[in-house]
Image (cartoon, rainbow, N blue to C red):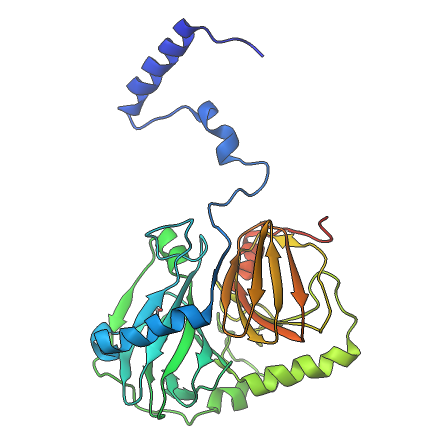
Length: 347
Ligand code: GTQ
């Protein structure tokens, strides 16, 4: 180690001040923070208990209409990223409420979105002229630049988890958005049309491969059955239990370029080996109960609770009963960029 004298320090500081006026800065002062030995995220583990936040979601219903708000959503903000409307560095999460008889008017944007239904049954999201009637635990996609509106013709409130790539699109300064001329779109295809066309693992020859999955509705009944069927036939992955990815059938890749979505089953009594990966995850409990240990933090888990596992945070999931989690992350985006990493069996 060479010693720096007070004189040298003063000389350097004067130099830094001088070059600052030319919008320059010395790399050597920040090199190791910029090019970190391993991920060092400001994102914090956090958990929202649904029982605690539901009253606020419901109260928002009497503050403003869905139509006036355009989207009546309470943002789930990571406490490590205050004021940024971000749940991880790349992703956004929110709880959207739509009451009986309400509509959330038609718009489109470059941001990709997924909806994961937390409560209620029978409201719809229309995507490019096709309605998906949503049930509890269904996954709905509204890919980049597709017209979408939501409406509730059921007789109860509907609440869903919105997962968007808002921070990613902001990072690239690539946001465009438009309002529809009308509040809702005309039905151009019957409900279920996309699933019937594209959900059988077949595509028309010559079909131009879409960037996002053309199957924009993944009903719980179907994917839950897939988990159940694989449960008996599968060797459990010690790190992941049984984790399935929702895919774009056109290329086997993530459902949307910026957002990957998964469902994970851990059988009663199962405890995962310590695991970490560079994709920070947002998870919600669908069924069962158990614990998530994320570093030193322990969350007991109940259905509808939502929690964040930040990038490169060692975590263990324990299932007290068969535990089903829905998870979304930026894994596919990182893989595309060649920077995704994992550590299995992390002590
Ligand atoms: O439903 O289109 O939570 O545009 C944030 C932005 C939902 C939506 C959000 C949006 C939407």
